[in-house]
Length: 116
Image (cartoon, rainbow, N blue to C red):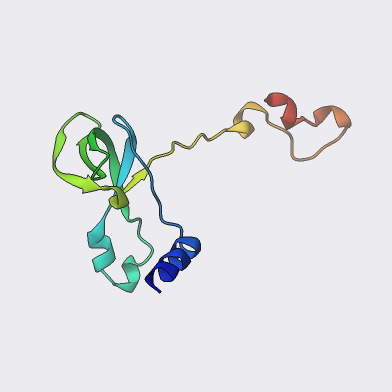
């Protein structure tokens, strides 16, 4: 009976199993934001600052973390409190290729696909 329940849980729920490497850039989950249940704080961002992993124990899935200026934090952090940071690339197409708002003839139309 218990094995059937475990199989049902494993098939239904997808738990995050990220393995972080040394020198990965991460975010740490802020548990104090979860405890604060005020309506005005409901949609606040709950991941704090950028950090870098300095040591990892893959058997226990705990990590020692430092700030980006290499100041090591005191404690260790568990896998489920960390999230990998992905840098966003923002392309500013409008500053390079300005098009007039009123098209008088076909020569003023710029094909943005040719820009890349």
